[in-house]
Image: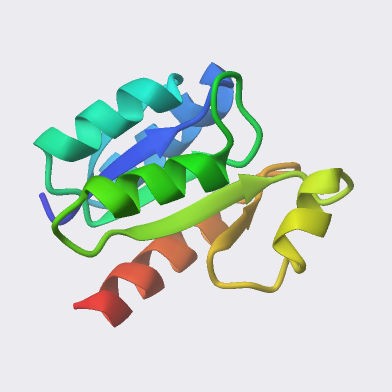
Length: 123
């Protein structure tokens, strides 16, 4: 296994698809639909990358980012899943950002490419 990834997404079908392909690409992947549980996971595991939905029940992806960045002792890369036609796009500004993955339609090739690039550039 290479690097560890924490996936925070409340849509189980999307999470299962991403887990399957990321694991096939050699990554260790933990998943939780609960952003508060994700904070606990991140305090106990050295993740290289967190992929999180931007809009969730209980906490936004931006709030999760801030919470983990505040509590983590190491640098963790974040990527945000978002729907291109929603208010989420206004929050993030652009789909062309390196830290954004379009959730609908989800492209596994985009996910793998962006994850590889982010982790490689951070090493």
